[in-house]
Image (tube, rainbow, N blue to C red; front, side):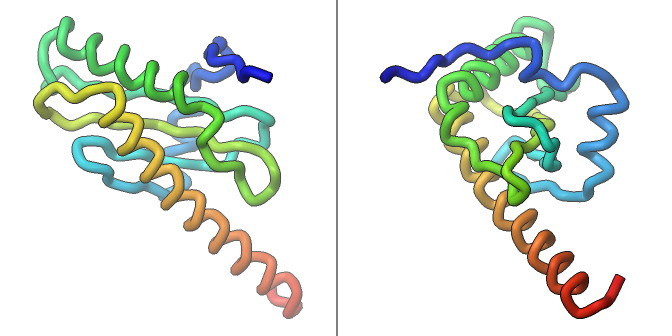
Length: 137
C-alpha cells in the first residue's frame, strides 16, 4: 500500500500563540543553517511552521527556501519520529542566511534535528516519570 504524501492545513502551525508555545518549550537543535524548535503536540500528526527572515534574501529567495522546506516535510513526513506519549511533534524551523540548498539537503538536516530532539523529549519524559515514581513532584 502506498502512503499519501500530501500536507494539509492541519499540518501547519497557524498562529503566533502556537509558534510561541514551541519556542517556550526550550528545545532546539541547530542543523547547519536551520534551527529546529520542537515540542510534543498530542496530535496524531506533526505540524510545522517556517520562519524565514528578510536577511535570508529577497522575496524570491525566501519563497524558494520555504518551498523546498515544505517539500522536504512533505516527502519525508512518514519518517519523522513519534512523541513519547504516542502523539507527534510541532516543528518550527528558523532559517539563517545561506547559499541555496537542495530539498534532500534540507530533508537530511530536518530529519537529523528531529531525531535528536526526539531523544531529548524521551529523556525528559523518563526524568519526569522517574520523579513521579519516587514520589517527587
